[in-house]
Image (cartoon, rainbow, N blue to C red; front, side, top):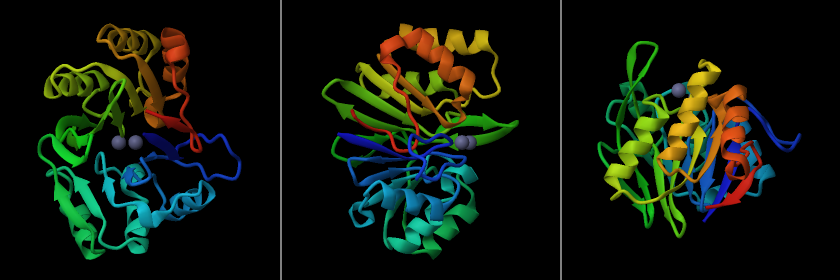
Length: 237
Ligand SMILES: [Zn+2]
Ligand SMILES: [Zn+2]
């Protein structure tokens, strides 16, 4: 199954817009998060030959502007999309999705999006001392499970543990996306990377709010099993 990185704060191609936030396209039809700006996201889609008509579903990890910001332009250009949100997203978010004729689906627990692709449902997290709900995407692949995170505000370890428990303790082949380690110091990041390795996570791709230090440390710990992710990067899972 193909993953295209549509938006990130780093890019491999100078023709692509970069900005705060994250957006991935999975199997040409499922959009995971939308970055901070819809015009930039649509521009990147054009540059990466994405056919917006093939996109059927958007899964939003959490209700932060750098993940929801591009959604409104996407909905204007692609009416009637299914939008997966957590029940605890703001009422403004839900109203806006419905106002733009999106089909809002609130996923409280593990929910199948399409064959082999699931959302974890709402996982409790915290941001700046406040409750922040977040969902991650789980893809069943031939090599094991792939877990895709937005910002991982509940904690990357907590998310991976929950996926292991909810998906019959299957092998976790790859975890990628935002790990939110930008404000953490090296020893903590290193022990997190080692803990993921001990939990059997075979490959990692920290992006977005993982931060520069985390990318270096994960690369050191994981070696060749480190997946570099920037806007424009395409890979198979
Ligand atoms: Zn973020
Ligand atoms: Zn966030």
